[in-house]
Image 1 (cartoon, rainbow, N blue to C red):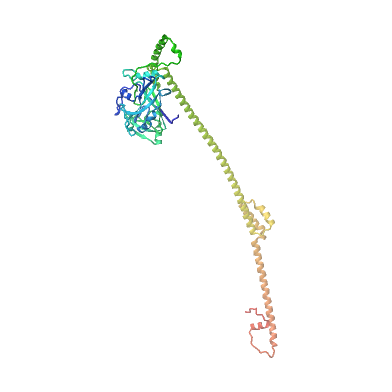
Image 2 (cartoon, rainbow, N blue to C red):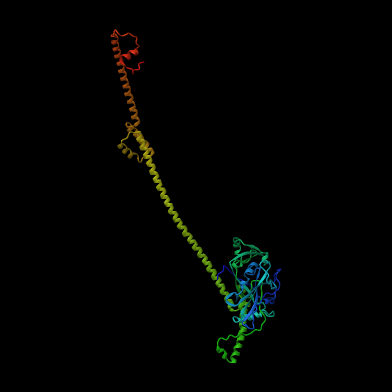
Amino acid sequence: MEFKYNSIFANLQIKPLVSEEKDKYLSMASISNLKKFLPDIDTEKNIDLLPIAFDACVVNRVNKNGDVINASTASEIVKNFINKPINIEHDRTKVVGCILTANFSKFGTNESFGELDVKEMKEPFYITLGGVMWKIINPQLANLIEDSNDPSSENYLKVSASWELGFSEYDIVLLNRDNKNLEDAKFITDEKEKDKFRQNLKAFGGTGKVDNNTYVYRQVLGDVIPLGIGLTSNPAADVSGVATKEQQKVAIIDIKNEEKEAESSETQENNISQEQKNNVKEEGVINRIIMKIENINQITDDLLKQVTASSVTSFIQEELKKASEAFIAERTEKDNAIKATQEKYEALSTESEKVKEELEKVKASLAKLEEEKAAKAKEEAFNIRMASLDEEYDLSDEDRKFIAEDIKDLTEETFAAYKNKMAVLMKEKNKAAKKAKEEASKKEKEMMASTASDLSATEVVEEALETSKVEKTSIPNSSTATELTLKEKFSKAFGLDGFDIK
């Protein structure tokens, strides 16, 4: 199962005696206080089982790995420790037992809380677990745990428990360098602000502090799942010891086939003697297996006397693995950066080509528009010039044909000269001149006609007058002579009512 975050809580504390820290909650705890949390197991009938009890962590108090859970989270996950595995040094291939019970107890004394609801508690307290170790899996480790309960032994409190968690979220916790308690902390919950402190966290390779006075920690939140317990000499939390009840050590003989039952007493004694020697040897080996090398500076001549070659080998393998993973990560990051840069370059090149193509299209469109505009302007100028000449002169189709050929490519300047030339050559066809000439001719004709009309009227009058004189001398005797005006005389003589004689 994969988790977004995974934390294994271990440090370099091997055998705590008296704490050098000044803490209002911290007091000397006795491993005997843990015995009341041992699971109820009949070890006389189950001689292969070793009941154990231990403090898994301290709630509301940061550990040396820079992690912490609060009371609310603890109350939600405590029962989920049950049935989870117990292993050696967080190596999940070396499972040696199982967790059976989960409780809370007072920090420093392991006084039981009973049914007290701890969800709102601010002060530190333990998650205390009980379980069994399968002695048949690793009898040497079982013997070591029993020996670590003896205050007179050099292995006293040498084995402790360290928990493992999977979780999905976290907040940043800031504390003064001399304080580990969550109740005095400042919390950073904003995602952007948390990112600023991420590089300082020990879990991500940081120093665990912002400056010499302010330390930075990670509060485990979200989907939190206990993954098990590792028996270690290096617990990260302020815990120490794995308690078990006093019992007589019983040798466990594993009979694998019937041939062993047929062995002679002498052979059995030799085997037992050899087994005891091996046990002594292996017990020392187990003591050393538990010692986990965390830093290359730990490897000293004295340490090499206490640890096995496998511990050193494991450390070297882990360091090589870390270096390899770091190299691969760095190379992958660089490869990705190069790939991203190449993709960006190719994208920019493609985009540049597209822009270039679009620019060429725009240029071609502009050139075409310019040509069309010039052609249209030339056509308009030609039409205007032809219209002006057609308006000025009385042109035939043949005239228009020749003029169009002449003016189609003329500039404004050359057309002005051409127009002046036309004024001379085609003055006979100038509409204005022709019209003026026609008007003059018309007026002349009208004047001549008027003159002729006047002469005809005079002749008529004169003739009428002559006639009138004749008639006057031959007036009948019966007529009455009347004095007539000149107008009346003309009217009477010619019957010309239409004449207007002034």
